[in-house]
Length: 250
Image 1 (tube, rainbow, N blue to C red):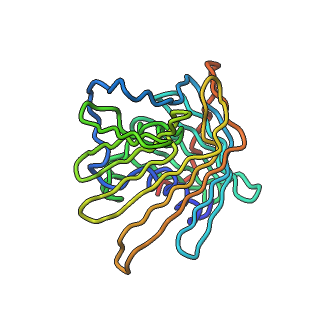
Image 2: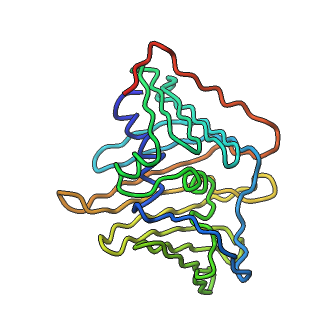
């Protein structure tokens, strides 16, 4: 996995799941009973996906095998043009990325990543975004607006407004918008191609678009993911992950 692909992996795991350091504050409150959003629940999840990052005029693509143990660990194995490029292991404490091509590895804790990218990064947000579930737990102060074919669940955390658009027919999240009030930075996740996985429906396709102000003006980053396989169950999965001694930490 060369440096551009390593950057792609890190962006996929981090950049696409937040806008601000204050965006995702976990609170324990009672959910409203008026809106029953259908979310994927599972013990183990596994899937295969194609991911493409478009950043300006550059485009990078990887294929990934993904395994998840609920609220515990996310494991990814990356292939670039048919070559096994590396692996990523995400747990409650950190993200580790191993490059088999460069023979090196990286370890990021969430505090470091939050500071680097100027927004809050945690395991729950990554897991929820991966599965098409709510990024922020329901709270009493959330606002619900009924439209013709959708419900709008409006949430706020710090200077971030989160808009969740839920299909009235399926009660699945179709779109999530995050807006940062003081910078007007926005992140949008569109979910589509819902197919049944276990007893629930899962978004096989998604597009993540990040618009943010940089030193040279407005920047646009797009991440596309397309699953060709997704399964849930209670059969235990393996998460093989080791770092060869000869690999250097960067």
